[in-house]
Length: 115
Image (cartoon, rainbow, N blue to C red; front, side, top):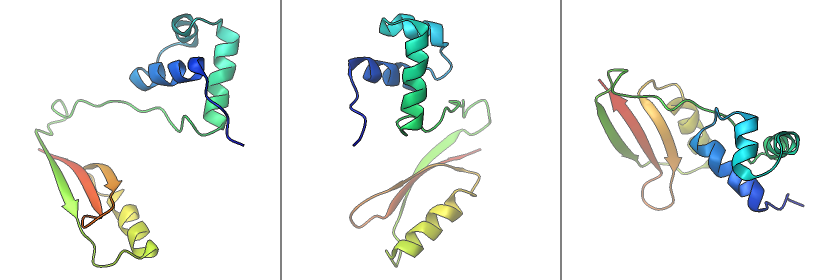
C-alpha cells in the first residue's frame, strides 16, 4: 500500500520543490519539527519515489539561449516501442529542455531553447 502523505510531508515536498538546497535544519524549522525526524521523512519520501531527484534551475539567458520555443510532435505510429524510441532520442538532443507526452492528435510537446 502506498505511503499516505500527511500535512508535514506535503509541506516538506512544497519547500523542496521551491528550494532543493535548503538545509535539513532550515527545512525542519519551516515545517515545525526537529531535524532528525525531518531527515527521516525526506529519506522516506526519496525511498518511496515521491522525490526522484534534485535539479538546478538554469538561467537560459546567461547560457546564451535567448529563444524558447514549444514544438508539437505527432508521430506516424503510437506503438509503445515507437513512443519509447522517440523519448530516448530526444534525451540526446542538446536544445530540448523538456519533453511531455500528450493524449490526442499531438503525441509530444517539447520545450526547446536556442541561441
